[in-house]
Length: 448
Length: 90
Image (cartoon, rainbow over all chains, first blue to last red; front, side, top):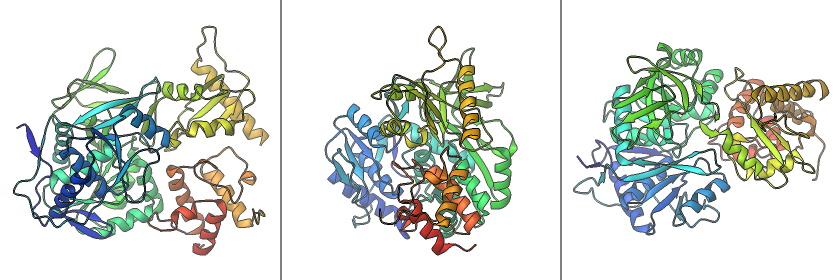
């Protein structure tokens, strides 16, 4: 089998998506895709920044059928977009109406118009066609591209669905709080529903009250694709949701106590996905059952002396796992934490080396370093930065940094210091940094 | 700026923001008209989520991103205080 259909088991008038209070049938979807295809310029790559999940899907599908690759930048920060676009100078943008991207030629996505008849055959896509590129951060300050084939995205969708026991065509609605441009969001909130004939909700609820009203909005069973942060917010707020759901969390480790509380309060199972942009979703667990991760069908995680690798038929080469993990004899594994140079804040992963490069590139910065404080019990730990920049204020440097890095990585606080505690070889030992941070925090507590 | 005097409610909310988000700034230095997100205090969507919980617990007002005014509500301390004043249940 060299190609597979663009969408899973839908009849023409089955609901494929729910968009702003209106159903979108499979027939409407294919018509929307075919209309948009005609409007796309003849370019190899596209930045699809639609905020509406249905419009994103229409744009994604139209690009695939035009053999164009969708670029998935790490954030919508203007400099990130420009840097990605600069690497692919023939790119154009796809956006919601009236929301163009500054400095990049953009086409607005139009949906809900065409009245085309159901095609004789659902369009098919080659399994080895590269349909998306997800960017990750290297240590050099330049985004690293990770190519995603149609075969990889569909294999992960099917493996996730079979692990979760999803039955095709039962009209389960998939609601997601995660962005669809994020790898987990693309896999779990877009590919998972359309490969199983489910209903994809086009919205992106953020606050607990939104999540509750969105789940009230859908009829029948639901799957909530979310993060520990949103789950924590819903549990704290005491949100009540309709029966018949399943929760799928990723982007950061979920504590067992939060999973237990969520299962009790929402009367549903809470499952977690372990994955990362380079490999996509890799393994699953029901958090309350234990720490062990079970690789998805078709995925093998192998440990050797120095590192761990993910193998799957759809990955052209084995992929290095950016976490410290231990694999047991059965092939299941435990995750201990991020590798030393890696930080993950709310699902955004970056290497500290990359952030340091960007800090040092700022005009007037003589020396500087990002620092991840010792783990607290909080869900989100923010970075700190120590900077040597005579004549500059921390506000000046923050303003310059904001142009280059995702807001979640902006240091809190950014501290200007006369010098950094570099040792004789020019390195910054972790203990010296811990000491510097501790001194600064103590001074704040006493001084301010 | 027309009125820069900080109301007691604005003061309370500034303190709530600083405590909830563990910011290393003096609440009194938050300008009521200045941006909370982006260029001003530099908050992001994670902060918005945490802040929404605190506001719900203290004032009984549940923020919704589907509210067409949501961007305006979060635009500044003053705008947030007005929205809380109008919608608070405690």
